[in-house]
Image (cartoon, rainbow, N blue to C red; front, side, top):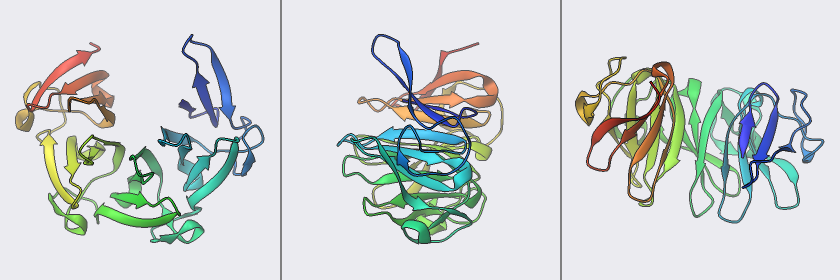
Length: 239
């Protein structure tokens, strides 16, 4: 499943490479309902839950949307620009870029302009997992700081991994909400090697395999980087 940003659609690529429109009618806006009539407004990311429900970070609608197995699009949480905890429409996001979902159906959201990683329960209740004001600081929960996070992923141990875009770092949030830095010195650039000395240039998205290796879309370096479970950063693809 692919979010087609400017097309305001969710696309699906089959195993044989055939691409079709899965949801959205191509017009930027907001409308829930059957997937062919629903509207999105610059969808940023997509994640599929274990039960087959598809979640979409609907960036300019400030919403997290869900598509059930019957193809019905609904709003899980959000709807107004800003910051607020709460359930459903009472919650507020400020450009939710990236999202990931764990095996229990909890959705994690990289809330870009709120500098936070948010947590959306299956019933639509939104809370902050980590982060507060913009900056850089490791620590517990709201004591930690991010600077415009854009990507999230969940590993097999339940840790939430974060592409901390304007800090040029890869961060990790433990199940207890403790934030640590996995890689990146904080200086924009390109440098492979030991994680703490490595350099990224606006890491945008990331994912993790079953062995704990993290693959990073290093946006301004135009490369895919690999952070091994042993803490070594190497080039995976791109030049």
